[in-house]
Length: 135
Image 1 (cartoon, rainbow, N blue to C red):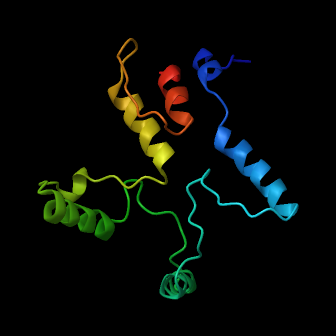
Image 2: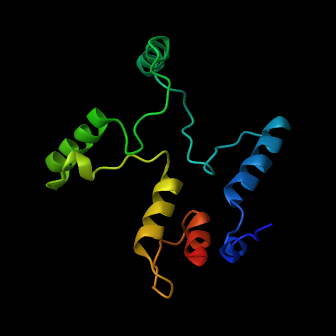
């Protein structure tokens, strides 16, 4: 059986999940908790968003999409970047990722070579140094 790549040993657990678990335990004890650990908002989606989601699912739009993202969304992002940041980005240069961690991991794998210096903000998400060590 093939062995697991050594870089896996450089990855650390996601501390935010441990904090979330502990916070949920405290909530069960009646404590009021403001969740900052996972990046989830403390409110539910607005009714128009829920209605649009419900309609999309009812119309069969609940399947995987193109790996780079839905074309109209990529065009809208390119337009937004041009309008707000004065960046001339073509829609085919836009990638919509399924989350920040995935986007960060793919970007780092594409741009960073072994031995490169990597700077990241501190405080930061616990996964930043973990990703950096694993490259």
